[in-house]
Length: 232
Image 1 (cartoon, rainbow, N blue to C red):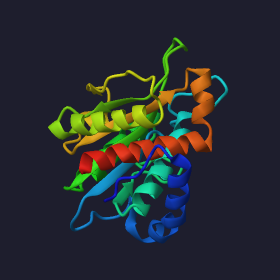
Image 2 (tube, rainbow, N blue to C red):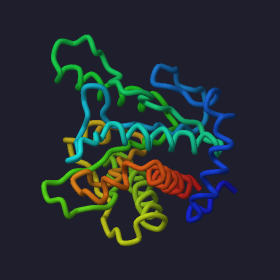
Image 3 (cartoon, rainbow, N blue to C red):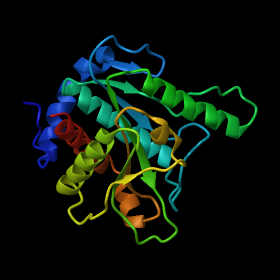
Image 4 (tube, rainbow, N blue to C red):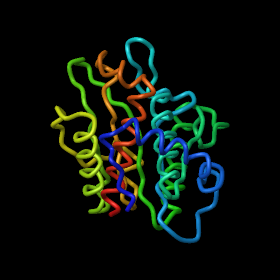
């Protein structure tokens, strides 16, 4: 039974961090790796990167940095729990053709490359990590969006949303939603695919939480528990 007692974050973190070093170097693929022959892979997408910072908080906190930190933690915890993963980016860079002459062309190449890799794993789920932003600073709370192409995507999204609410944000009453054409990666992905907006960088109080290692750890654990609940 792989189910974790997510409510006890400190215990989970110690156990998982002790085990992760045994898995990180030999079970995690990167964006340049070839698809595995068999078995479920969890594709982890840390949104944005490189010249594309994503949104930005008033204090200069960049979305791309939080995305990568949460994604790295999620990757480590999943590996320590025995799952196979693929990180679409492992550092602060875009993964497409960065030799292209325009910013737009490089961004388009990046997002198409992410989709190409995700689609190359026949038995997989895609978890894309992002941070939200809105012009009115009062809004807060995580929200999970899903691909319209697979009925399983909405089930996965609800499982992750429920896990975050139960473990980390009991006051959160946001609903999961299908993405539109503006979210290229999810809209075109045919595998079960979700995007986790962990919180709002437009909200000062939530930004302060999202910047901390402990909150990022709790968020990663909550997302993982939602994935495990879905898979079971």
